Length: 358
Image 1: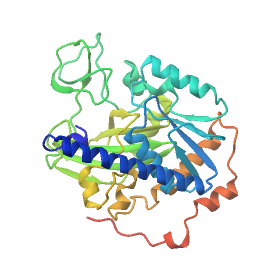
Image 2: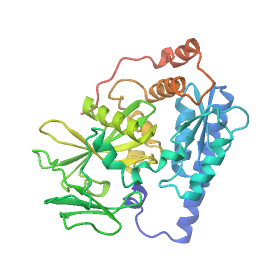
Image 3: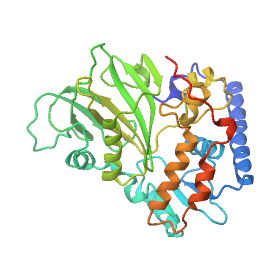
Image 4: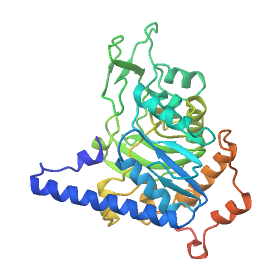
């Protein structure tokens, strides 16, 4: 369930709908104002957030967060005039054949530009072979039960071909049309809670996001009893994220991990190439923010330090600048001296690390 659905409340009358439309216009005007300020800042590199649909909330929030926090990159959701350095495909998955062709045609006009999440790899998660490829590469995932497999035990059936798909748990009863079946991995901890760890991967940067605790095997927002912003990333979590990147060819995604308490093994159960990045309504209220926030800025808004002590904007710049150097498609190269100076925080931001809240 999306946060907007959970906090929707009673049905809106026409007057309330008019107020909501007005607030939405004000919010997008705020995004455009941040974009103009970023353009005036003369940042050295440009990112085009390329989608197939009119401006959506996830793209607007991503654009605003980059323009507010990056010291190297300016982002824009409509076609950039002049030079662009990175094309970041930013569209709801799975891509239809028509949408994929539209994106390929737009990218083909800029062959020298590096691309994050090329359309050729965008639908990896929705492929019938995706989890088998991950398993064969040594990435810990639930085993996808094939027609020829002899399997007895609990299985998770998940609707195929859609994001945020319905799923249920029960004894394996053979293949079912329109659904994929996976072996069930027991990850309940001694305290009686299941845990779902959400992490982000972006061009080599692995970032801890949220930790959901619930008593239902399918820990989701609607069944969460405790929510934590941030947790220590383990080497096993990082290994899973890097493994998904290598197998999928994707440079940006969010992962949902289940972690077994006995040995700390992390299992990837969901890959989101276009994850919801708007922070929860409860977080927005706690931070006393008028506009919705990108999840990368939630901890700062709540007065919490990053688990690794590195500001998210600085980590973003480091990851993308390094990725641009590695990318074969980009002909432009960063000036190391310029980048190092730009990545050094100004004196007013150099403060001792604060202790994380308990």
